[in-house]
Length: 93
Picture 1: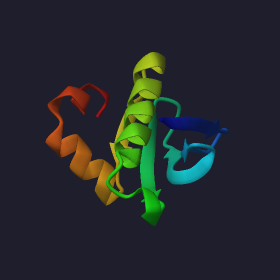
Picture 2: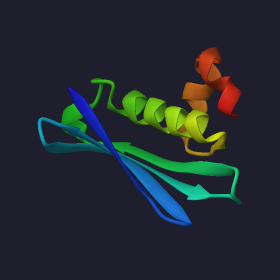
Picture 3: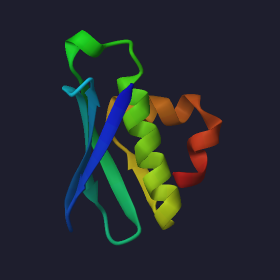
């Protein structure tokens, strides 16, 4: 099971993924004003490639945005591609 923890401050934040207590991935973001944040980097540890780690972090970011009425600007290639592929995420763009 993938566990995602969020770290957030006034300017930056991240979603960090763990599998069985091991660090599996990191997605970072930067606040762009009060109402939106930019996903600027996503990385998954090589041992966890193909296990849905990136998607789980992205879904956590989307839920965070929905719960708080925020919008996401996906600049990193992974996030950008994910938003293009999945119509159900576009409400937070």
